[in-house]
Length: 285
Image (tube, rainbow, N blue to C red; front, side):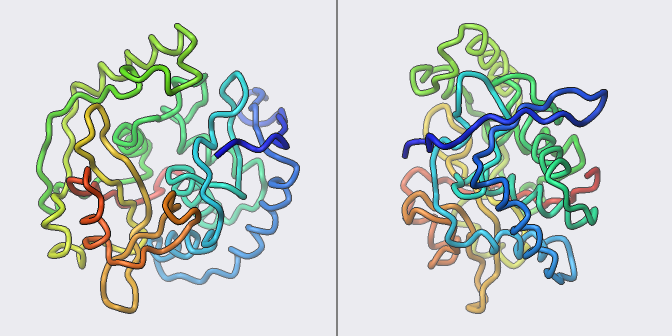
């Protein structure tokens, strides 16, 4: 799906030492922030997980749009509430939940939180600073105190696998036409090669689903060569007593709750080998 031409680049001055933060946000999306914050202030959840699930459900019906961050010729902090892919859905939910936790409501606070979650060590510094691989997203946000990987606790198993899809498919990523960006991504992949992936095998998910809480982040581990994760979403328990997936669905074209329980939903994905389960803590936000 094509990125909308109405997106404009806004440069907003705020943050430490008055540095310029480049933000890409459409004229339509900026007022949507205020509307969203007003609606979220009525959330009365008893814990962080339920708050995350409630914030996630506030996006139900939002259109799925792929490659929402691939805008312009240089990396900017893309803010888009009217179209989400699976990762930006999770990142927006995290950022909005953080504002609720801090009792903040300013757009500038939101963009700071979004930058913290989306970029390596919380700072945008060009295209390579974005956490493109979700396993690195998890590890880096764990270091920030924002999430905890609980996959091993659930009985996850380790997998050694080269993660190099971007480096071996350079033509799929417009920003990698830059030799500088391409070299930086190759360096990232070299570091990722030192890490193992821990995932909960698909055939064990149903027996462990009661240990997974609503609001946990679910990443779908894959057998596809060079990739760690193909999709992400948020765990949510439903009235049927089963664990489902709240996610931006490319198949159905919008944010939805999976009709099937997560364990059954994954059986229809040929390349899926299991899940990585991450529990948000937001302790440093």
